[in-house]
Image 1 (tube, rainbow over the protein chains, first blue to last red):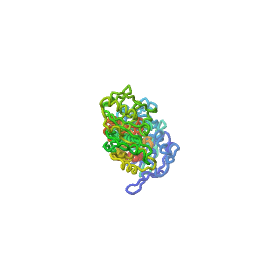
Image 2: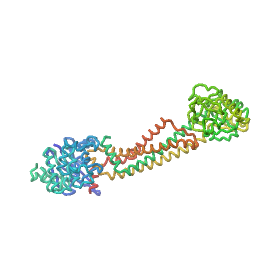
Image 3: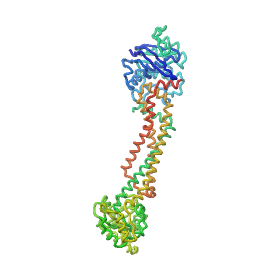
Image 4: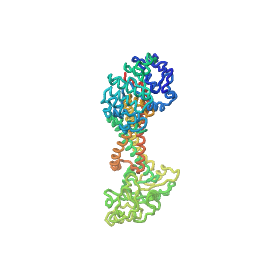
Length: 237
Length: 398
């Protein structure tokens, strides 16, 4: 089991009133899982994903990743897991503006190895087949551009490739197809499905109706609670 | 700090060259003020220390007509043709408070072969001298033989190592360490050699006035627990036409302007320090706020909180380092170009420090200024390291 989440809460205070953005969530993920979380805006999807990625701290409950309880790990240990084992795709694409797209994509590896970012060339990417993923997503020709030169959709696809660069055990993607047209959205979901097929656990929060059918488990988030929706019609992978 | 950190730090520095260079130039100003102030301060301290050790005497007696004041005696070596009354040396030696008293004789030569400017010849009595000889012994261990001379640090000596006075050549036995005043342009001889120079002058037709057989000054070393005031009263009671200075009198006139100068230097340093520190803090606070998403991204991609802190501190150190080296480069050129001018125009003893001391000043400035950036932005770095990546991203998104 990659992720074992139980009794998870995240409480915020808004105008003096406490509310649970995430409430009593139970969740499990195994290798090769493709889990999809749907739900209206403000239902707590992004908060849940940030908690599972170790970016956010729960108010209560446990997140156990590969047998390690996040609560018992130091910042350095959680950061190392986030760097190497978790590929997180944030809802908004954020890039370092003064590095090329390729350098941004390879940033997780530079952080892991402590190497100069420019030291990596495309030759360094072959072990994880980044080139083919860039080609699959239609952005291979853009790798030497600066992020400001790319459209929102292109940046979104680049941030997906960046999440894959260290061959993580799990991909956690928050709205990976926002800013994408239907065709490109399908390409992204197909890529994620391929990853799941090869053993990577995939967890996606999405509004995209096409995304539902890729999940072998689909959840609905409603007012902070994660409700199981059962198997999807697509039949999983 | 690994290569990724260095890479990010350098890129962040270069991405906003106006801001980075502006801050670096402030540090450069601070470095310049520190270097020039530090070297000036050290030079003054060295000048005063050297002068104090060279003076050697507790009390100095000068002729009234010499019109010397407490500063020109020491600073300019501007000795005049005036001589102490006959019998004054013997009287002073007989006083209870006096341990040793030794005479000195001053002549001037406008026609020596060594210098373009006036050269002072200071004669001393080797049998009683306790001032000049210890000083000479620092660079020349042997006893001075008749006819040989010792020169101040600014007297140029040719390959023959001789100096010609009134067409007679005198071998130079040694050159003294700098003192930082007019004595650096003086020549030191014992009384026998002085008499020889007088003879040479006479054969050239140069005549000293009739009183020139007298002493130009008497240097006195006091017994322990002796009273300078009482000594002065006793001497004044027996002789007219002289003036008496204690070491304290002489140095109080020098220390005051030197202290004022040092205070001014350190006020200027403090001013630039505050300005530079405030500018760095404000600038880093603003820029880290602008780059919140980038720090959040680095957190998401696996940077630790410590790494984020290193990035901010490292960039502050880079700003400081660039400024420090720019400042040191320009202020070094300024200081060493104008050192001769300063030497001539500053009215207090001034000795440029040794290379090792200069290197130490540089090392201290480099160390201090490399640290100033990281120290003043430490709070900002802490704030960045505590960034909530999830909130930071959402704040901008929504």
